[in-house]
Image (cartoon, rainbow, N blue to C red; front, top):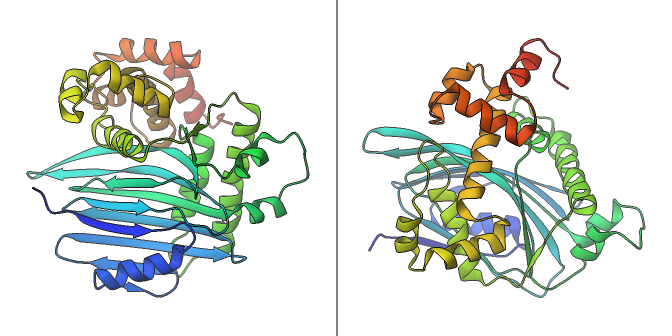
Length: 328
């Protein structure tokens, strides 16, 4: 069986957990910067605490063996955690393949949460954690606020949102600001608040189905499925193979996945793929043909039809707006 490293932590002891993590793996933690470099793992992170109750972190991991992080509830203040998966690369047999760990995961500190981080991979993610008391200080009183009612609900809950361009722009600004010599600390605070504000709008005004009392093993398995099997847009997942891998029928696998991510597996995968077309048009200089080939569409026309069905306009229109500086 493959060797695995397991680490237990709590949303209430963020910086204390990084200190322990560094000590366990003979790395360093100076109160803001985490550096670990073993024979099997390099882990770099920056985490900043604001007003004693808000933490903003940026992390980059490359591990040769699985790392399982267990978040255990405790009886302290209720904290809200936002974990934003970004992108990275898989390394195996001399080959490098890009993968996409995109998504916004929101949960409270009552949720028992276990993540198995992919191994043989390098990827980035951003975390934002704050107490409910902190959130209440920055929001006006509103007896009908759905998000306040949700945040004050101490039963375990979890919610997933796609990583849209608006949130991603703020994430990219945070990551670009890590350089110590050029750093503006206020960016970590202000952009994190911007992200929280966008999420607040989405939870407040959009129809949302927040998941409550999810079994930790189901959550762990479906997170693993999403991160390891739905992140390569060049190859559509095989449901029969996934059924064998996770030891359950296709219908049960789809049912549990939908209970967390609101869609069956293939529908979720296809939506992520078309959103990646949008993302590559916005953030890269690739031609539409290159994007179509990289994402393994049969041809440009196929990609255009799928994109237009989802967004209501052709990808060429989006690219023209970007190229002419007319993109809002």
